[in-house]
Image 1 (cartoon, rainbow, N blue to C red):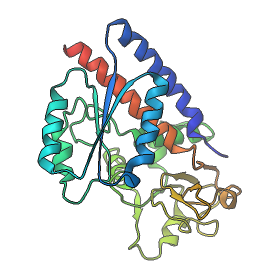
Image 2 (image 1 turned 60 degrees about the vertical axis):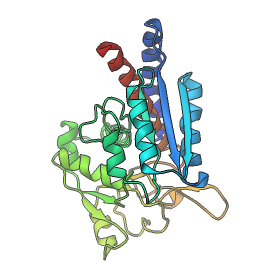
Image 3 (image 1 turned 90 degrees about the vertical axis):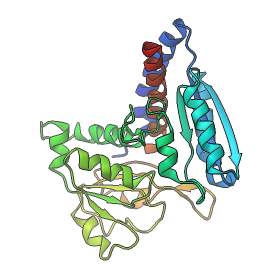
Length: 282
């Protein structure tokens, strides 16, 4: 069965619209600032999606492109935005150039404005994990086991494929905090098929094809694809061939329209919560 994050995202979007209405009644216009560095080809598609949703929601969005800049200039800008009461959410779009210390940049963002949820003391949950959580909760509704969601997760063999800083790594860390220790596979993992064949849930964040196939997943597995790449035809493709695995997986997400729209919706839900927090603390 296919689980479309785009459909699940509608509920979150409705909540955002309710938040925005209340904020506007109190004279607050939510604002997000997106900072980009490096060549446009690295960040354009991701930023365009954010700007498009901001426009749809009538949220004020500012895109600051620093192109090739120094760490000092970026840190100075972040300090200015931290102090700006009209800015509620700050995003420094990844990946960052090699001359920029990403840990220092994360720590430089006010935790009350870190809507990406990267800081350990951030006020917000990781949007990507909230998206995965919703998808798994949807899958659980079809399970005959009437147990708590976290207990249900702990009862499953989970494998995360890929350890990237915006995909696999934060998901692994979040699962660990919930008392779940997933099997982890990356490009250096030998006998990766053995891990996949045992997995009840596979969360793939590689952006590569051919790793997850119909012959190395078990019947009834749940497949969640985060990674994307462009095929030879120029179209976005996921980490697995949907037609190939649809008769084997019990649930799977499509690409596009799977995790992405839900991830984006939760990012903006974090933004409206940041604006609400700002309202209370002002």
